Image (cartoon, rainbow, N blue to C red; front, side):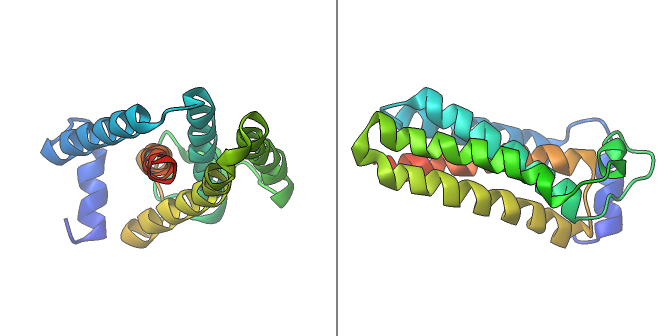
Length: 161
């Protein structure tokens, strides 16, 4: 749907359409394929991608306008965020990357890929939805999480392979 206003109207409909179903299937397939390609420390990759997905969501909430005053995600935007809200999460996520190297010294490329890739994908996913819609909704907050997780898993699988 090229018109952003019409796109928001379509998103209000709670019935999942063909494109929504295809997107959900694509995400599940991407995550499954990427996870099956990871050979070591899959648990660490899962923790990292889940964390970076939620971090990307926090960036989108703090940085971009919320489009619906009555939406279920509006309460997130109403909270006051400071730059200090990001620091504990980033430190924890960076420690997961360092743990890759501590557990196996030859995994430094995956550690760097998880840290840089997770932050970049999380930021760009939120920016892309903002560009397409002029802001965010609760649906796009969730989509930032899902796409960040799927794309970061694919990146990690590519770096490991």
